[in-house]
Image (spheres, rainbow, N blue to C red):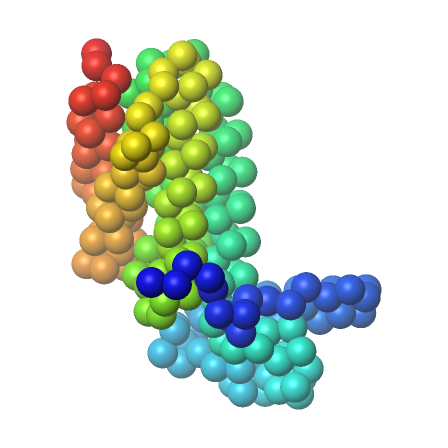
Length: 206
């Protein structure tokens, strides 16, 4: 499979201040529209009508709807990573397994507070481009896990990428909860934490 994302699925960053403002307005409007109609009802024509913009003014920065969805996904990932990094620093004195459990809860609470994040990150990939964005998410959060454990002197294997596999396991549990319940329930938060700790214990030990 080609690892390069189709350029049409990538947002074009604005260079002027007026463009920056329109870019942000489009993304904010897209977020609100997705909350209301979901992926099935989302389109650039609908978004343009909602915002009072021409379609061309949106296509200038977002050649396809997937460019908007992928950019929103990246922005939510950045916010999630920032939240988890901050939480990880708070938990630096805890044993590694308790840190993982707390981090899982932090991630679950983030997704539960942001329905579009759940939709885009946990809803499952619908195109090759969104699949690669999902892969990027797992690798990015896997690196964060590696870094946080590294601060405790714990080094995980990179071949296979154990940290990313652990994140993928937890994400899969979240995805099932989101599919069945439209949210990440307490039971699934516990299962995600248990699954990640059990898998990582094979490489870390107790």
